[in-house]
Length: 257
Image (cartoon, rainbow, N blue to C red; front, side, top):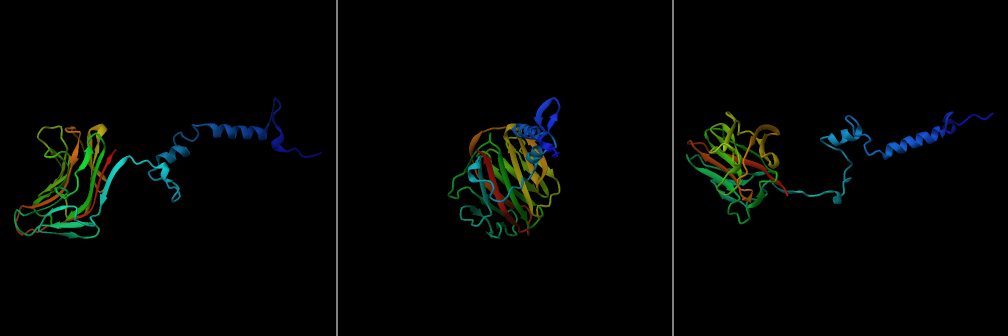
């Protein structure tokens, strides 16, 4: 007697469907299920939640990408497009530097104002990111600040350091008359750090990060929604014999469209 083929057997005495047919049907039902593998801990849900999705190189084709951001990034290959008011300046790859002399009350500024280029148009109702990597070679008393001007003569998004105390510029802070919030009373600005300020427009909050660590979340008011702003880096000596160099390695400005 020939041996039976397992897959060709009926799955039960009351159902003529074979085991092979039942397996094929169940597989097809699974493939047709749009909710397969999306529960917690299952493969699609885990894939979606990954910080980094590691697909093969060149596996994402250009027509699948949609640009929803304005993005400006520079490592200062040239200072020709910037306005300088300094004792000294130059390129120092990656980036640039500006310098004061050892004279009390001398200052140095690098700005996009008057550089021949247009101010950066923005809409405060869109998310805005302002990021820099920089250091200053002397940590004695003085004033050092850098920011994106949110409205001409109005307010700033950025950072302010004076005599060791690091604070954040808050655009249109809710408490009237206040535009600075202290972050660190003894901050080592002479070491290289990456500073990021990020406006979450829908929440009317600004997040401030140093080296990827969130150090402050602050509510703000909108004020003027849409305008155009400039970028400033500034050092001011407030004691004698303290020449300073500010090394700016990179600058990023980005906004949703």
